[in-house]
Image 1 (cartoon, rainbow, N blue to C red):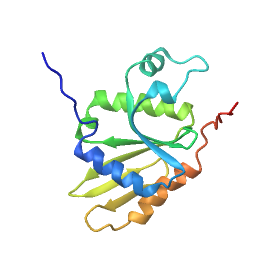
Image 2: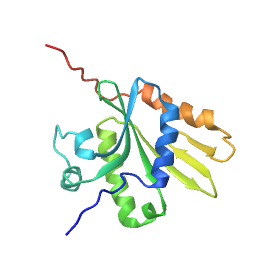
Image 3: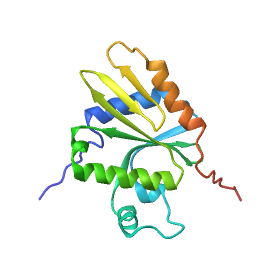
Length: 159
């Protein structure tokens, strides 16, 4: 038997992570494939399906945290695999749990030959990955959510 190491991200995810790094400064950290149960903690009764989903190995594609590792923003990288009814249901559960935890969620998806769509509840930005058109607007959307994060700010105190 043998085992080999595998790459953590695919080429699309790699490009998205490179873009996210252009959006945030050294006051933030970007984490990939973070388990939903590491971001959200149940503090009151949940619907059985949501509770089961929270305990599943479901992960988010990218999590941006502040320097104290408080969640600021989740970015989900969408593809044609997210178009199935099953995937849409998983995405709905993930969005619901993140909303309960007050962690903002943005979806990203590349469509039509190099157009990157960033979708938040109140805005959609289309970035042309070839020409860079609307790059500043796309970066501003990510930055705004990071700066306005309403996630609980838990600070570690040194002894």
